[in-house]
Length: 172
Image (cartoon, rainbow, N blue to C red; front, side):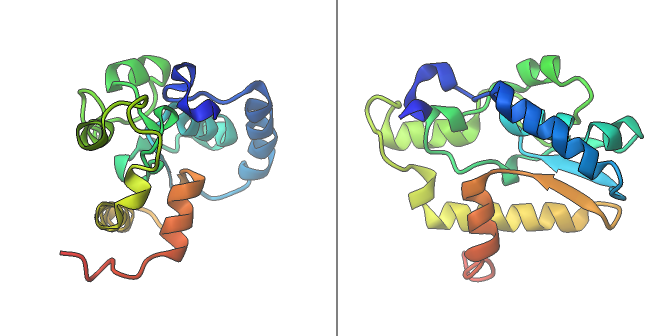
């Protein structure tokens, strides 16, 4: 499984992925977008920057938001420090992201050990934490100015976001 491999820490897009994003830009340039919100993982920041290149060039801001990141299970889901991300993505607003090491990854490393010690699902099996994070994501998105937001996130998180909202208001 490649997502366990240390070389995929905070994984980047492949050349094919970058090409697909460039093709998507041709479709997104006609959208009226007030804000692009992206997960702070490198692959989603790349996706947002390339897929919405024309929109961003027109002055639309890009904000990184921790609550819409991928579920934290493998090394590819661990994010780099904000200082490194900011160096690669200087036009992204990282003001909502904790500046130190990845706190979500650290939480699960404390519970389960490092990637070699535990190869199973981490956050995906922690429904309460996912419900709390989903609530933060919804609150963040609802608080933003403008009506037309583009959200760049991840498959597992978006599956949870759109299909498992039961308990969002029930979680303590």
